Length: 318
Image (cartoon, rainbow, N blue to C red; front, side, top):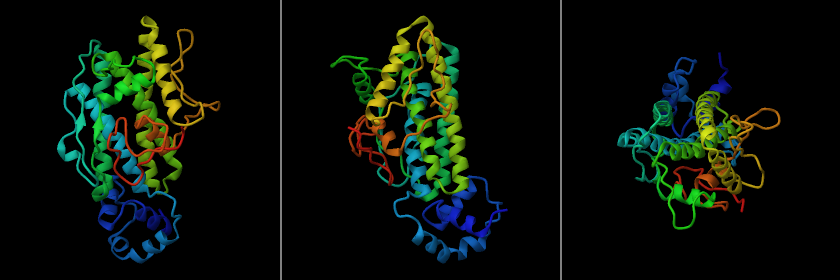
């Protein structure tokens, strides 16, 4: 089904050693594609040769998926705390790099039953993403970095002009605030996976990333649609969403790509370009938003000690 060159390259870029490569293939459910024990046991010289000619500047597929894992940790902790009052279990937070704690987060008292159901489903999906990526990466999976779900949202709200200096923004205070917090994450997640797609050479990895991208896009659609519906009764929802969009645009570069949810006369539930395509962000641009900083830095915002893994620096956009 697959030729020897593809198999060798796919395995080589799936993780850092043979054990971890086997872990990924097992987790991804592709053990039957023809990769036998002989290839895994005797392929070291060929794998080394492949690595020697690979472009030095290209991040490995494992590095890309570890970057995604950092984002999934953040989303899972955000949603799980909102829906259950607690975050990921300890056995889903270990790995390479410094494991950090989570500041902030508590159960949201949802008033609308359907919004609570949306939140429950998204929380389960994000937890599942963490579990999948950790299993796929095996021994090279990074640990959960230090995460801030308290001061970071206040900083974001202040930068967006939603609150004044000295005020705080409690993202868990009510379901509307929760939805605004989710709106920050979901749109970024979609553009992050879209931007990463061209960098992934392993087709098994690419399919997995595409699957997560699709789910994040569904999540974003749910959040944007729910916020838009709330705006029918509370028009300020539209302007608040636009302020958040403007903030993301302000820190991720000079291009004006990010879009709000529309206004009272016209909805914008699916942010696309002129061709009807979702737009992309680089990892550096994603970190500009996560770190709440337009400058090239390695920590800040939602990740006060930075993310774990080789991809950890925001871009020079300021």
